[in-house]
Amino acid sequence: MRLGGCSVRVLYRRTRNEMPCLMEEVEGAEAEGVEFDFLASPVRLESTDGRRILLTCRRMKPGEPDASGRRIPAPVEGSDFSLECSTVIAATGQSVERTLAEREGLRVTTWGIAADERTLATNIPGVFAGGDALLGAGLAVRAVAAGRIAAASIRQYLSGEPVTGEPSQWGIAMQPVDE
Image 1 (cartoon, rainbow, N blue to C red):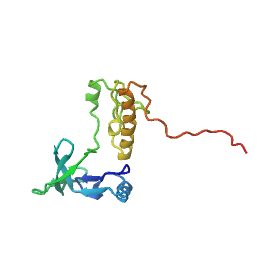
Image 2 (spheres, rainbow, N blue to C red):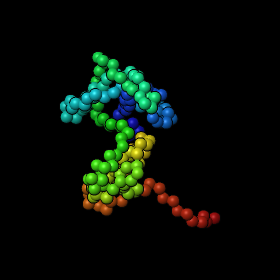
Image 3 (tube, rainbow, N blue to C red):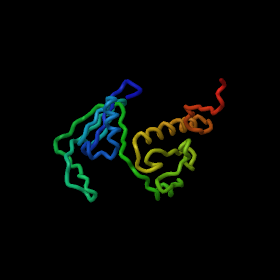
Image 4 (cartoon, rainbow, N blue to C red):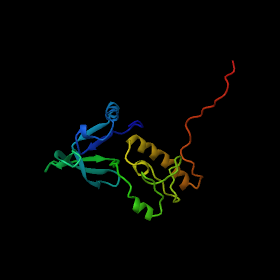
């Protein structure tokens, strides 16, 4: 939204109070114009014309509590609705299957995939990791920041440049001030 030209809508299968996030993040997003649609869950994605996406969703209702006490969302039959989108981003808070990652040759940590802090490059050339795959479940803003860093690194890698990550946006020089 900050780049202009689009609207943003967040779908969440549970209620507002059950969101595993800082409520300040939700309130800040709403203040900037992000729409939230609670008790809604995506069920199907289709291409409409090769450029647009039709996202079919289903209304949910709070169901029985699970072992942790959180209510399991239950589908409301006959409540499907569709949204035409230009982009769909799945933000589901996943964790890394470390055994599979190691079998593929990736180094792992306690939290996820091991990657260089500055470039997000892994030990396999051309493979980059960020967000939940790097540090485990965390804030969406950190995952977005990792995506930005990875994008810069991937562009450098694909262009045959040295992979150095995103250029520093800050330059601070510590020196005496002349009077």
